[in-house]
Length: 313
Image (cartoon, rainbow, N blue to C red):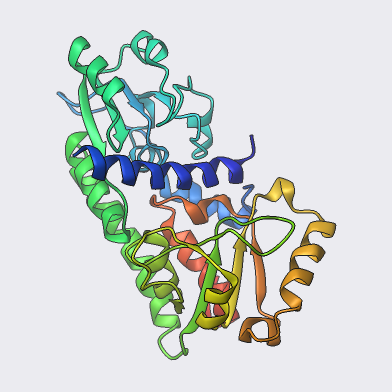
């Protein structure tokens, strides 16, 4: 399974987890790899009393734990964990829709990190006396709050403070470079039919991607949607008048033929400013869809896509 497909499924799982919680309560460039690895803290001896054997069923939380320097304390991850590389080789324990309870139990964890509510896993934890941490990342601000909470839970408050400081500093620099640009109206598509522009799924207001678009110098054209991940019609897209259209697609699927087909499908819609100005972009980077410390890279990527060199490297 490719990294982007895993990341896309991660977004689907985030959507599903949001519903569950409310009803029951891609390969980087060398430069990108350097930025990514600099954001993964060096592992240190875990503080006394901190969990020693963590199973994370939340891919974004697994990235955060690694960024806090606690990757060595993770013993199992979701099937959809894509970063950092050392975590992808750990035992997999299924996902939010299909947790492998037997595998989880054999790993003998002392902390399980969940996304949303998973009654079967929670029951297992209660039976075995395993602590549970609920990841509640839905919005951009939740990413930073989650870093603080995990830092406290793992006894790594200083690492969390330092990580947040680095992230906010990098974001502030991107925003400084964009201070004089005019925000562009953006449609970011996470999924649609391949044979036609229909069943289009995008992001509404309050989602982390909505805020990423804003910080990158854009305006999400469906920010006023009453649902976080709306499926929109062609009529709604035309009415929204996006100046830039971005399609997120897994790298392994992207061929020259498919790219040409997708661009041709849009080319017939001259009523859209994005089409008239030739501003249809296809992005294959997996991190764009994961609400983790790599959100900084998502903002940087979108800023470059929308505003070019003014956004910096």
